[in-house]
Amino acid sequence: MQVGIVGKPNAGKSTFFSAATLTLVPIANYPFTTIKPNHGISYLRTQCIHTELGVEDNPQNSKCIDGERFIPIDIIDLPGLVPGASEGRGLGNQFLDELRKADALIHVVDASGSTNSEGKLTQPGAHNPVDDVVFLETELKMWMLRIVGKDWEKTAKKTELAGEDPASLVAERLSGLGVNKGQAENGIKKANLRGKPSAWTKEDLLKLVDIIRKETKPLLLAANKIDLPTSTGNVNRLKQMGELTIPVSAEAELALRRAAEKRLIEYKPGDPDFRVLGAVSPEQKAALEMIREKVLKPIGSTGVQACINSAFLNLLNMIVVYPVENPEKFSDHDGNVLPDAYLVPNGTTLKELALKIHTEIGEQMLYGINARSGMRLSDNYVLKTQDVVSIVSAAKRA
Ligand SMILES: Nc1nc2c(ncn2[C@@H]2O[C@H](COP(=O)(O)OP(=O)(O)OP(=O)(O)O)[C@@H](O)[C@H]2O)c(=O)[nH]1
Ligand SMILES: [Mg+2]
Image 1 (cartoon, helix red, strand yellow):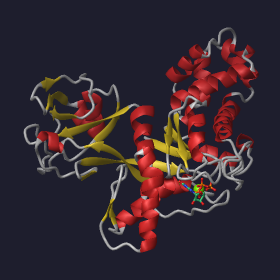
Image 2 (image 1 turned 180 degrees about the vertical axis):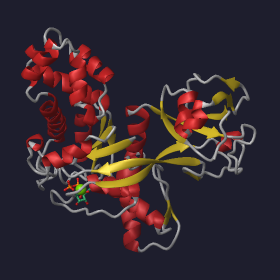
Image 3 (image 1 turned 90 degrees about the vertical axis):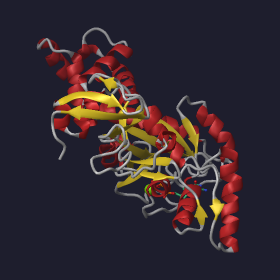
């Protein structure tokens, strides 16, 4: 599963990405700084269960810092998108092509209104960021319409003559975006499209792709640059758009993570505050204090971690589970305690988890054990978040 960072140029996408992954990527106050996507690893933060279970852990696939489990996730920083991108304006199609692989989107919006729709600097507060939300969603729709709607009438007629289902045609056209037939069917139902598909209008198809986009590439708004005074009122305007909206200061997160990396401060991504550790210069102290006053105190965190968590836990509806081999010791065969934390979609069964861990183990699974209670679990047991489960299989692990 991966999340794409999208938005107009100069909104702060690369700053967000850099803060989230602690990798150096070009950041500058002019449009189209990023011309090629940046791929990186960030982490979802969740409370680790080792304290609750009263054990010391040895994480393998994730990290545990002060009782917080950080689970790796994939994130992509994309070039800026400008109005008309679906027709190839700006870096248009190239950008949109990259989006196909994203499962959810974080739309970084310049909430301070200090950049126009093309990402050029303007007077702070002069631009209404609500327009950016409307434009991005329109571009996504137009992009999908171009894919679905190509020679629509002609192709739909062929489908009708062959007695085929229009959902198959829609799904086939959007298969590159990871859309399946069930999702296409749902979209058609929700858009209330009846009658011959060849008679569906452009408006019908727009309605359909908008529904499918929301279902297959849900997004949240990262209302960025919250440290600037003109952002405050705009965050409320953005919230009224009906999308999940999180106030963010990507720049503050980047500064805090870099300071933590240099051991100047103690700070974990997502923390509500930091603690000064080493000798900081008066300038550094002033900058850190400013972050505390302008970002951490008013919004409770920098918002970057909250966006990543929400993308996976709310938009993608995922849960965290801990598979172990030894249900008494909560360990793997090497004795590592609570070695792995897995992110799986809510609704995943024990058998599906077993197959994800290893095909053979899944195929030859006998039963499972809830390590907390010692109770047996059947293979169709639906996993709950923070479950610790052991899979008993006839197949031997490597
Ligand atoms: N005040 C403030 N400035 C920010 C914040 N985040 C990013 N910026 C600034 O916004 C400008 C653009 O940042 P980038 O991260 O390069 O923006 P981008 O969206 O990746 O831009 P493109 O690659 O051109 O699409 C830079 O000058 C950043 O320092 C923030 O939280 N607060
Ligand atoms: Mg960039």
